[in-house]
Structure formats: structure tokens, C-alpha cells
Image (cartoon, rainbow, N blue to C red; front, side, top):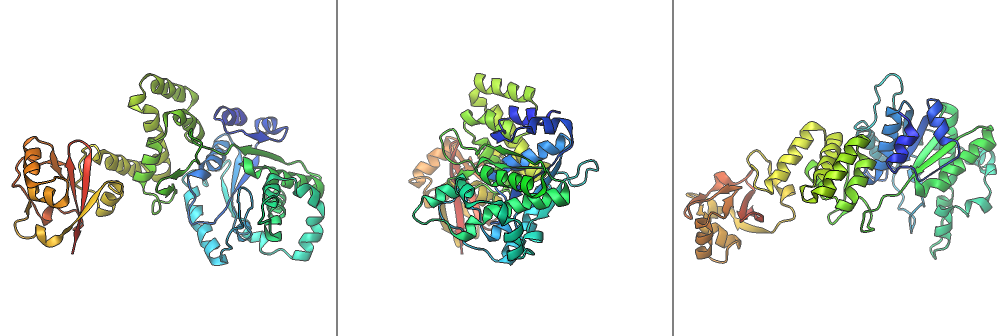
Length: 424
């Protein structure tokens, strides 16, 4: 497979140093991409460079995922309006270990021909001697050139300015490239387009310090059709860790993709071949209400990160909102699924003994304005308890109906849900 042509078709090539297409076509290339470790999980914003590494590996190249255990102690000023809060060494190390486990969902560390590698730049950066570093590495950089880089220039133009700590970040990232060039035979670095200045500084350092040839390629920064930042929702960042963003929420994130973004995301994030993407594009144009492109996107991305079991649970949870079976779901899953619907609190003792008639429950919870309205809605067949239709207004809702002792789910009509939370 032509790696560069594949990346180009998918819209992943923003800029590159001359010779990259030919290099990827003629030899096996060791290529690295850095990931900061400011949190104990990557998020969907990291998927473009991470999946690009995976695509390069599938084309026969050798990927290195570099955890920024050392550079995170400094903080990359690229795209930031203010200096980052410095983190402890212990927290950074813990974050790096957590992220390493996530990379295995995307990169193959076991294949014999071109196994992926996970490295941490803390292993060499924290051992550096300041005077030696300034003498051997700093001499290859001029301040004149550094202040023309976007990551530096935009911060210098702000009133807060740029600390010397952050100003030195470019030297450290460049040294990473030099170290990997020497120790791993790595001749290419990739990253987001906001990293172009830092990456090309590393290419120049290798040329000056080793008289060697190195290469760079950067990917576009992804935005949504409405211009807002990709990877953000009303409830916050979409993380790769299931403890932070559940498989259900992850699935829903992709399922809710705007029609204008669906085909672009299929190219950027999935491994679907061009022919299949074009079929989904045609289906989206002909029958947008079917949302076949979004469903395919949600399925593949959820299975890729959370596996077949995670996808099955996410789809089952999604079906609940359309009347699917609730039994078997945990209270945590119920809370996740119905986190955005109205809720009401009910004292636990009201469900004791023989239970509370559903008509009374509807009125007590506020889903019906009165018991009379509740009885009429039940007679019309529009009331559901835990997604099972109620036919008798006197049918009791008891403690045996409560999900793990915490929740009841009421529904009026097709989509009018209310989550009842038991208190006491």
C-alpha cells in the first residue's frame, strides 16, 4: 500500500518536507509522534496522529509512540494562551503508564516485521546536564529563528509573554528527535500542524549536529462543520479511558456526528477502504435520515477502542432510549444512559410493602400532572415502567422493580423519559 497516497486521500496530510512521499514509498521508515501526558488518558483529539501511526505501521513502517514524560514537565506553548501548571514527577509517570495501555488498542507491539515501540522521553531528558546541553545542543539554535516560529511568536505578542522555561521547549523536542535518530534510527517525525515549527527545528538540528537527513509531516487540526473544536461536547472532553468516557458515551459521540462531517470522519478515523467510504457517502446523500455513515463510524470506532463486548454494550445501551430492554443493565449504566433526561427523587419507603401504583408514581414524580391524567395515559397504552408497557393503573411499582436499589425508569410516549432516583 502507498502510505503517502493513503494518508493524502484521507485528508491527513497538511504539510511535509520535500522527499517524504518518495521516502515512504522506497524504504521501511521509523517514524515517531509525541504525546503529552498531562492527563491519565488520551482523548479523541489524539486519534488523528495515533491512527496515522497505525496506518503507517500497516503499510510496513515502524512507529514509535513517544510519551512526553520529560517535556510535560516543561509544557508545550504551542496553541496555549498561558503557561501550564507544572505537574509532579510522580503524576507524570503515572499518566505515562496509563496511556501506554491505551496505545495497544491501535498499535501492534507484537508483530515481528515492524513492531511498534512505546518510549518515554523522561528516560533521557531527565539525565541531561544543563551546561553540556547548552553547549552541545543550544549552539545550533538562534533566538532570531526561534522567535519566528508560530508557537513562540503568538505568545510573545501577548501581554503575559513567554517564560524561558516554555521557550526552551523547542530545544527539548528537537533533542528528542536527535536522540531517536541516534538510538532508534528514526528519521521522520509527525504531529499536528501546530507542531510544524518544533518538528522542523528537530530536522534542522539533525542536519547541523549529525549532517544527517531527517523528515517531517504534519496533520491538519480537526474542527467540526460549525467551526467548534473537535472532541468537545456539552459534557466535556471525550476521553479514551472508559472510566472517563463510557463506551456508551463514546459510541454516542460518533453517532451524533453532523452529516457535514460524517464522510470526513470516516476517512480520518476509520480503516474502511475507499470503496466502502464512497458507498456510505452515497447512502448518506440519498437517505440522510438513515444515518448509515454515522452508524458505521460509531461501530468501528467503539469496537476499535473498547472491543466487540464494549460495542455490544454500547449498542444495547443506545437501544434503551428507543424502548430497548433494560434488564441486565447496571445502575451505573442506567445513570450514564439517562444522565441527560429529567429526574425526580422519591423516598424509598413509598415503594415498600405492596408497592406504589404506577398511576400514583407518575403523579408523585411529576411525569403526569395528576393521577387522573396518569390513568388516562395508561389506558391509552403510552406509559412504560423500565421500558415495559403498563396496562393497569393499579399495577404496583415495588422495590423489586428498582435497578440495583437506586433507579426506576419511567417513559411517557416514545421518548419522554424520567429517571426516578430513590432516596433513603
